Length: 162
Image (cartoon, rainbow, N blue to C red; front, side):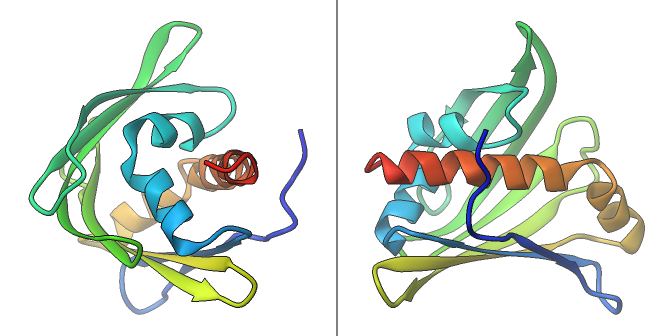
């Protein structure tokens, strides 16, 4: 398994309960955006290598909803759901993100797709949660593995022209 040449930054603010994730991709903003709103593509790259993702609801429009489950060896190990609050093609997605096992730990996430020179994109995700305990729980859950491995899978999809 190859690692991307791009590093993923995951930062926690000391003063507010947020997580910021910043990552560059060798693809145009429209391609990276499309991989976030097309359920077939999203299922192929989201999460760590050890799971498969099954989309159970997906309506990627402002006011729509989404849900997916992660399976390992044919058994569901985690499920997530949320609402699309704003979908601005190729620019921005604002959605809620909730782990079914912690329904009170809702994150409000804003994803921005910044065009860079050379047909590249900087993806910036800002997650805001209710308190530091929730934020720290997310950070200690292994989410960094899922984010890094997922973005490596997204790199591979984008390289194939997805």
